[in-house]
Length: 119
Image (cartoon, rainbow, N blue to C red; front, side, top):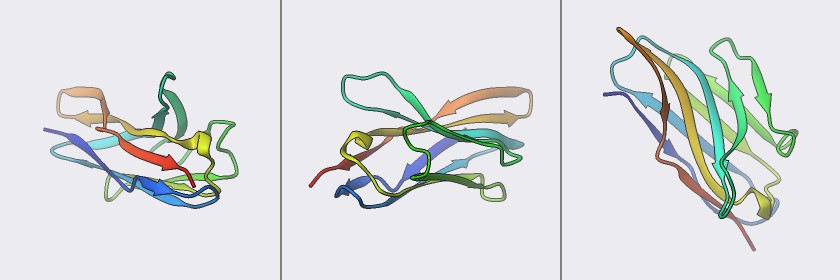
């Protein structure tokens, strides 16, 4: 069974930094596009950043210049380095990936990790 395991959330002061990690584990051929989404209380889930296996990257306007997405294909892991954090970045952050296995190609979500930006 393939799963995404996230880590790195927590409480940070405004202006601080956090690094999220998400590793895909289980039996699979490869991991294609990987992304981070977030959902703040009372709001819809939104895309934060995405990265293809070939390292094509996209960011939401609200995080450009502050967040950096990267991945290690050998480890099937995606990272989100978050700098200059603002209170409005507070949300549950979800990892997302498209998984290629034998006979199956599907989208998978992580369980979410809470990021709280507060003084």
